[in-house]
Image (tube, rainbow, N blue to C red; front, side, top):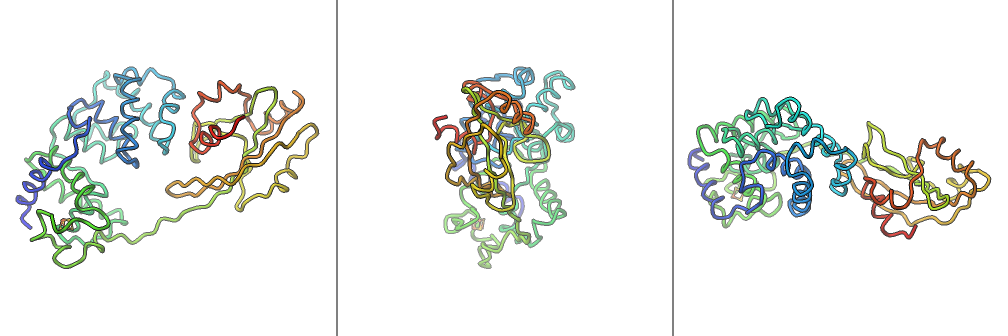
Length: 351
Ligand code: SF4
């Protein structure tokens, strides 16, 4: 298909069918950046309330930079992929300290910002600064591979360049902002992964995938994502209206969030095994929860919560030391940033 025609038809389609999203009616790089970080690995309907919450709490990048990390994580709670929140915060500080509170305007400079990858840099450069830089993501892989019949395996790192150079060529000297928004919406609404609406598509006459019946084969993706199973036995120690929680460390999921002390194992731990590990005078087992299943992209977590009453302060102190945890009142726990697995349990249980 003629590239020129593809671009103009896509922009025309976007003018008629594009989604009206709040960050599209602005060229403010702060709002655009915020929306892009929130929407990485998050559906729009889920991300929208967070976008408004963040703008409400931090109307400017300076406000965000001055906030405590724990406040940012708390506001982010429920969105998952918490490294995004930490990077968001670090990036705001970087923009304030290194760029005097103004986002840089070029793709290359934007790439130097913490947590800003190629996609986000392209989005900010084109939407906020009208630069001719194309976005490349799953939608772009899908639409371009189908329309132009590209067979390169998108699981291979080198394939990114194939799509990036085609997409950059498409937007060269054109309206990159409209093209970028258009291809994202087109991929999300029309050329969907399963059951694309080919009958109503402006490209149906020339689309390679449609005309060769290969919509389900394009884009080509070979690798399968491995999903790891993890089993958590959470230990809830209660002493005089206080519970022990600990901040999660680096190199694992949920860094910087707070959860209860836990025993992790490769297989589900029985109640007897957990109680056997906790041989301590003055510890009263109150109850054990049902299994809670929590699904992440590369991990499936099975968690049970074991509640104990501790009847003396010396034992409570021993448990703190042993698990590297801290005691918190119920009110404090409410405002701590926690993984959604813990938050849901917390809400369900009358502790
Ligand atoms: S014809 Fe079908 S596969 Fe081709 S671009 Fe349109 S919706 Fe996608």
